[in-house]
View (cartoon, protein in one colour):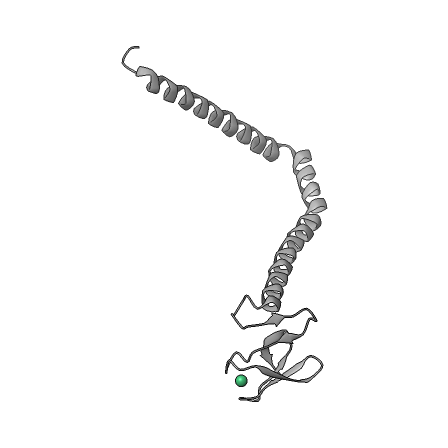
Length: 135
Ligand SMILES: [Zn+2]
C-alpha cells in the first residue's frame, strides 16, 4: 500500500477531483469574463437580457414576499379565531355561538349587539371572535 494508505488515496483522489473542478470553473469564469470584456456583442446581449427580465424578476420577488406575508397573516387570523394564540377561552358550540372572555378580567363578555361584546367588569368593548381589539 505504500506510505499513503487507503484513506490517503481516497482523499487525494477526491482532492484531485475538487481541484480539477475548481480549475475548470475558474477558467470557465475567466473565459466568460474575458469574452464579456472584449466582446461588445455579448455586453449588448447581457444588458438586453437583463433589461428584458428584470421586471419579471422584480414581480416574482414582490409576489413571493407578498405571499409569505399573506400566509403569515392568514395563519395568525386562524390562531386568533380558534383561540390558540393567547389562551383566551373561546368555545364554538354546535350552533356556532362564540363565547368570549375578557382578556383583562377573565370574565365572560356580554353580547350587546351583532358582533359586539362588552365586558361586565371593565366595560371594554370587543368585536366577537377578535377579542383583543377594544372599540
Ligand atoms: Zn374586562
